[in-house]
Image (cartoon, rainbow, N blue to C red; front, side, top):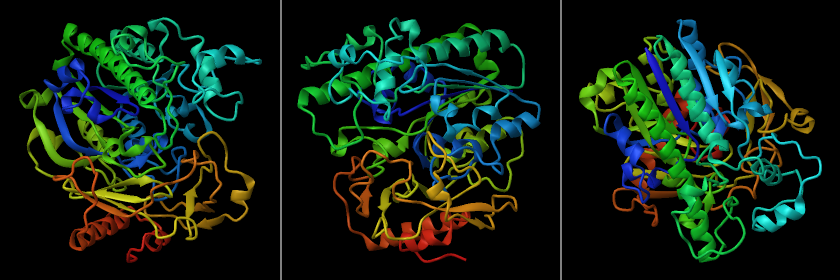
Amino acid sequence: MRTVFVLFDSLNRRALSTYGGRLPTPNFDRLAERAVVFENHYVGSLPCMPARRDIHSGRLNFLHRSWGPLEPFDDSFTKLIGQAGIYSHLVSDHYHYFEDGGATYHTRYDTWDFIRGQESDPWVAMVKPALDRFREQYHPLQYEETRDGHRLQGMINRSRIVDEADFPCVKCFDATLDFLNTNGDTDNWFVQLETFDPHEPFAAPARFRDQLKTAYEGLILDWPRYQNVDESDAEIDELKANYAALVALCDDQLGRLLDDFDANDRWQDTALVLTTDHGLLLSEHDWWAKNRMPCYNEISHIPLFIYHPELISRASRRVNALTQAIDIMPTLMEMYGVPIGSDVRGNSLLGLASGRSQEVRDIAIYGIFAGAVNATDGRYSYFRYPADMESQDLFEYTLMPMHNRSLFETKELQAAELHPGFNFTKGVPVLKVPALADAKRSPRQGGFADTRTVLFDLRNDPHQLTPVYDPEVEQRLCDAICREMQAHDAPQELYRRFGLPAMT
């Protein structure tokens, strides 16, 4: 068995023509002609590394901790298939793997390629940044003079990315094609092709951006802040055009991979799975980006394509059943015939893809640690926030006390206690750490906002513009949330936090 797993970052489903989106994406369409396309696929935990822990372990991260490494008791699918003799390789420019909070992911693969230069990857060394030059190049919204945030290092890195071949996304596909050229005729391997694009900053080669004209005439503006929209119409159009250009780059590079499959007839013996970690708001609901605001479908409803050589007869089929990110891990495990452990809460999707089954779940819950618990049954979406976001007990449960780019501070750990563990920690106790309001975890650009509990009817209001009041539906979704929380052995204080009946 051979598999190429393509993972984009921040890929908005509504940007893809495959899903009726506004942008022409001919190579995503081309893949859809061969693959099974999932119509109701949702995220699990947000943002980047929590989503990857879900994918590795087949369990939700956000109920127990925020952004952090894989834990010693986590069952990473790449480690498990490796024990069964499957070679795994990671190609990625996702620099969060190489920070404190992602440090144990890439080492679960046999080998890895790390492509440098995305966003604030600490790549280009510039002791004295060229601030005057950067000030003349970049819009004040994304110009920074200090190293505390992402943007200064981002500007420094971009001074080295000039030609199309320099772009990290292009290099990721280069490295994957090299892997296929070297290893494609062997058997029993898994390669994960992961690119940070189309995550911000929305920087793409000129040939993609030049096709998109806007009325904007200012400095470079392609990196929105995680905040409410307050830009001019021209600035909004510019940001959206830059995102569209980056999606076009992703589509173009996907075409290179499909060309390789065509030229080498890999469709006969190689599976191809494509998805993203989450979407992104592009001024919808008066917001940019993710994390701080409610998990609208622009963020939570994501694309998924599954091609398998044994499912050629299912080419271009659309699956309407509800699925989510934790279902990826058991799907990949089943592809390799590796048993799925009892700790896994996701479900293999091969039955849906083949038509053997019609449903794997009736609810998907998702969210970001310390925010809402969100749920969808495919018809309704529900955002349930605590009545008081700050005053109730909240703890991080971990043996790896790391945030995104730093270790937990000593003030966080001073009140830590040893907790006996959960049903997935294999008898191992964990630290129970108070989740301080000022801890260096997502979201950090102003905290949570718009924290209202709301219900949307997706059939009649697919863009989630007008909340509905239906106590019966809300109660049904709350009951389903409780069942999922119980299945994940969520800590008891979470039931109190969300005003839900405790489960025993």
